[in-house]
Length: 272
Image (cartoon, rainbow, N blue to C red):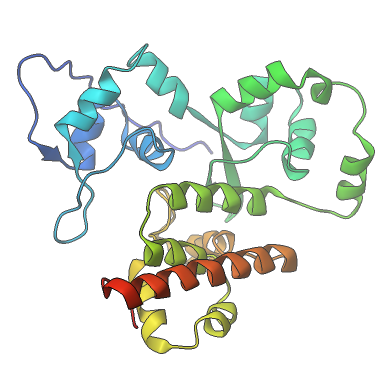
């Protein structure tokens, strides 16, 4: 059963009249002629930059930032193309001109990285892919779309491997890290994808753990609210393979050393 289509916000061509100096996400989406989910994706990808949040933490977007985006070449069609997503192997396979089965193999083996997810009514993960990236892949790697699978892929499939969650987490963490230069904020991003026991081992000081928890990023747009579906989605947010956990733990240790150094020198944030 397909979800009901999302109604696109009406386009607004701004001439002499300017919006408020900073507006919320819903109004910003309308200014750029995007749906709420398209706008959320644009923010996530770093295409639209949020300004200073409100006192309650809600994101705000300045008129200057919206002007910058609206002045980009090919606006608004080019902007929509950059944030367009397709859901699931069948839709993604159509973009590439291949079967859903072949697409699933390419994605499971890590050749194509999801940009998001949805949990359907059967509590199954439906991965989302950027249509523009699929088209680029088709143009760049025609050989992957035809013929037999390479030996490495055959080995992965024989082992029932699925790299999609790990590849998505890597992308998600990378995007979050690019949106902050604050050392404690960066440490909080890395801690947010580690199992709780790893965070406790890396951060034995309860006061530091409180800081990291307060700065932890919220779940991505579209994360389900229904408990049963949220339980499925929550597992996607936590690193699982030992090698992945080790990488994030080492990255967290390095980020914490920088954050603690900042606190000692400036006292701006976090325990000293």
